[in-house]
Image (cartoon, rainbow, N blue to C red):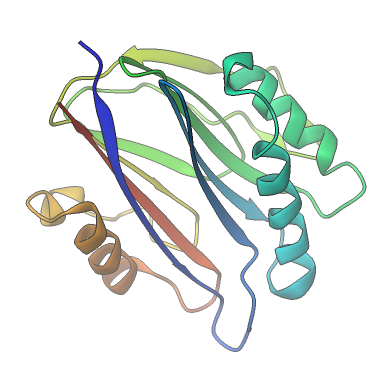
Length: 190
């Protein structure tokens, strides 16, 4: 049985900044859906250019390449720019393949996805990539967020909310004004 994702995301720049160094891409191609959250080093205009370059890169790489190739493509695209952290989740309609570098977090409700972000910075250096693949089920929820939100965020408090409502509430309750903040929520639907 192939299932689909219902996805929403919200973000805002650091207080006093006009542009955010966080970027999000939700890309669908055939049975594949790519969920990407990027957090460029720092904030403001220079950081925004790095996250835009990462998103532009991910917009072009074939999703059939796999999550490892997608991460390496972003790493190459950011070599001459400010580096970034990122979490990439590639859903093929049944299985979630994900990998992250740096401090962008992925949490789930329902099926456990044991992803551990790889230490490092895309565009500079990172250790051997740790990718995981997990079968997903209808009713599962994925939440991906940058370090502009507190890592103490409580997903249970937004369990009954739609992805859009959950994003708004999580950003309001757990967003830090001292950094760019971005959250993406995806529900697995039948």
